[in-house]
Length: 383
Ligand SMILES: *Cc1c(COP(=O)(O)O)cnc(C)c1O
Image 1 (cartoon, rainbow, N blue to C red):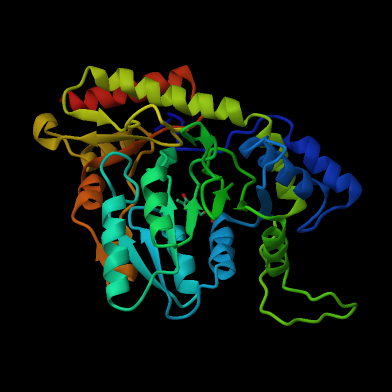
Image 2: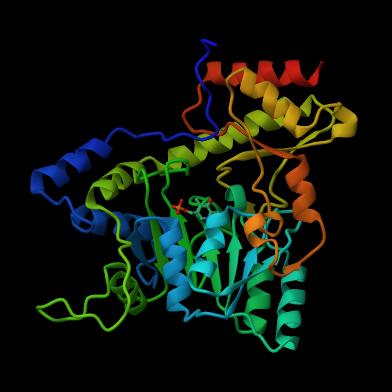
């Protein structure tokens, strides 16, 4: 096989990243703090909300997972508490619940967005309250960049007075009713892992609504050192800050974020055009124009009866052509590690998992990559 690998989603540097890294070296800021970190936080903040009155505060961290963990800690989630979590997601959305010794309550998806179903959410809250356990938080995810139904989900959360942690790891650049994803939750998290729309190699951020809370997040994320010349600790801390080197990569990436969003959306339109000709494949798309997805990953659903091909057969065919594709996130309630926790829903997420496939979506794919992808898909589906 001499054809180059076409990846699902690979890092795409803008060009200025090394300038910021070199600056860190020149100043010897080789540490989990420094001017690049401060600048990166500012840059994310103004990207999310450039209103000078904005209360938004951003703490740059070592990962999106670390940001979720700190959000739970700051909400006071403790051992034995219950936390609601969208079932169809990456395991990192749910793992921090377990770090806290808390109990995840999984919720099915709605078909329109693949994200947390507002009706099942309310059913679950009522069910848990009737058992004497009001959930401490709701983790809602904008999967593949598609915003969840922010209005409906937050209405339910408000009605029962439960805080929302908005997992926006895949949705930097997406909007709902013209407001940026990453600004809706009581806490929001971002990820800059290598496969995300922009990357710091590894990194994340916690978005809060107050300077006070940001300060507390940084305190906890920098080993919870009390204000004393010696090392004094009144609380358990974590080592969760972002490195000044990685933040340099992030600064370069912020310069090209809008271009990256455009390129991912162009990939989505490429697939919309491609599958227009094929009966039996639908490209997952926004339910209406209130939703603006960065289309971090383009997702298709295969109708096996019409096509005579299922998602695994297509995936394996593409793999032989050295093209990476991937099934949707396997829902958490179907995962061996989480199968014994409560689940509220039917089979929406499960069915989507069984019929869906994520296709190469990177912002760095070329015309020649696209024609290889098109050829391979056509050859597989027309057999
Ligand atoms: C990537 C991702 C995370 C975790 O982010 P890391 O930076 O990799 O720790 C959390 N939730 C979702 C939905 C993700 O895709």
